[in-house]
Length: 183
Image (cartoon, rainbow, N blue to C red; front, side, top):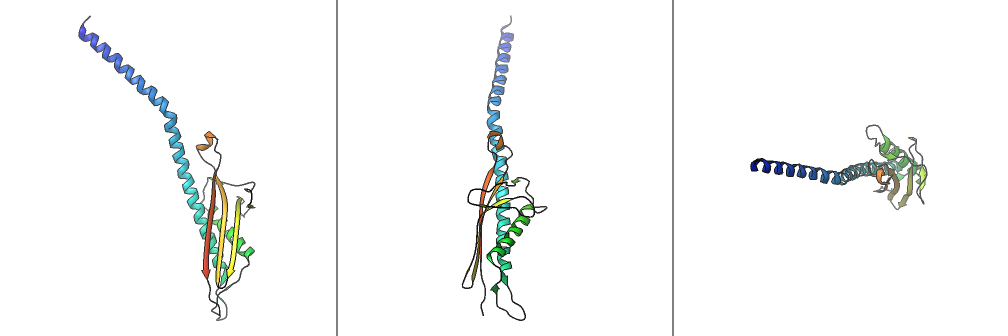
């Protein structure tokens, strides 16, 4: 047998072994690569959901506060609070529900709750997708009006449920404050 041919056969066998070892390493690392991809997708979805819910709650808090102040009638320019705490809470629920489930702003990952977290109140708004309200504060001190809200929401992950994580939890808070003129 020719020495040159023997070297070519040895080199070809060595190359085939290297190709096989690369395939084996890739197959061993594939679950890690897939897991990293899944976690990054769920992290992006969680960030998107948290941002949308925070924006919806901030808007609802500010809107309920705006409804609480009356610009006056018949030339009266004084501003006086005209809502009770329960009315302000009702407006906040309507605004929050409308912003978190509105068409074009809808988040398909939000999970409707069937039971509240301990220490919170389950709110079933007109959309029918319930969420939990941890606290609602409506305070008047002098000519300062303040609304504080904390809600609890859940969303469903896409990939993390493969390893047993079936919900991502959010506790979102918002505050709004305004002063009004007294005459």
